[in-house]
Amino acid sequence: MSSRAETVAMDKTAKKTRQSLWKKQIASILRLEVRKNFTGKRSILIYLLAMLPVLIMAALVSVNADDIRENFAEASIIFANLYEGMILRTVVFFGCAWIFMNLFRGEVVDRSLHYYFLSPVKREVLVAGKYISGLVTSLILFVTMTALAVFFIYLPLGYSGAMSHLFDGPGMSQVLTYLSITVLACIGYGAAFLVIGLFFRNPIIPAIILYGWEFINFLLPPFLKKLSIIHYLHSLTPVPIPEGPFAIVAEPTSAWLTVPGLILVTIAVLVMASVRIRRMEIKYGGD
Image 1 (cartoon, rainbow, N blue to C red):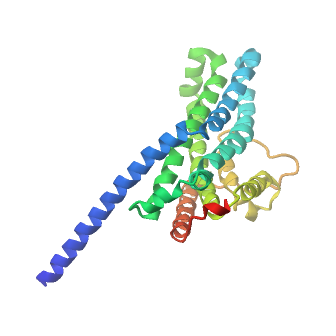
Image 2 (cartoon, rainbow, N blue to C red; image 1 turned 90 degrees about the vertical axis):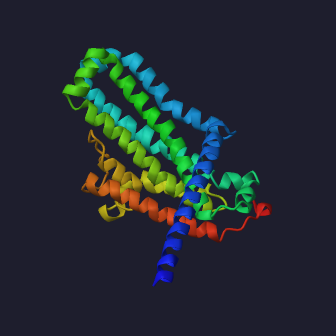
Image 3 (cartoon, rainbow, N blue to C red; image 1 turned 45 degrees about the vertical axis):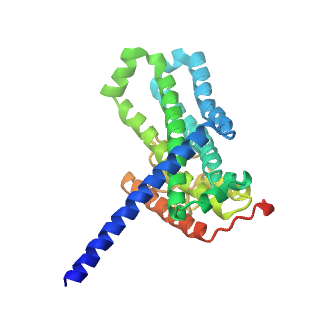
């Protein structure tokens, strides 16, 4: 009995030691990859992409400041369309594609992935560390971009007008919802593109197919709409916007299902990535 208790205690200690080691390894990978994501040669495109909506919003506001101030309700609808069409469907989508597909595919192209594979790091830990690094990078860039875009739409109201709309009206709820949608988009698209980068030697084609699927979502029947990420993000939009005269109407999915649903799907996709990377062999000659 005593021997069995000692064995159980030793197993628990060993498990805690492994978990502590994995956490330290993930933290190390995270630091290395985040620095690479922000300062590497591929980071310039991401900066330019993230700046684009901010510059467009600044230009629109500078030209239409009086109209925004006089009819802020209509300006909020216009912003909702710009947010979904430009920020969500374009900048966040392609930004996440660039960041997350390059986490592994970029290493293969640079012929540096073998350094990770030769180190004493479990490949599942490597997937977790790289995904978190991509998520941190995308959240910093795209949440900041969303916040700046919101700042510019509120700028014509002045300080008192903006504070009044934020705290005495629906403003704060809308702003937090936009930021939350951006976070969920980074989580969902990030996992999808990480897997694409792992499974496909040329990830551009599946990325274009995914974009096409997300783009035509408004034309799909309700049961197919729910097989896309944009459907759930669109369901959370704080200012409802029509999908067009040819859209097939579907009931929006509630936030209580959308948020945990996207997180569970993301976890499932990362498990797929972990299974894939266990069997992955490096063949630089074919890339």
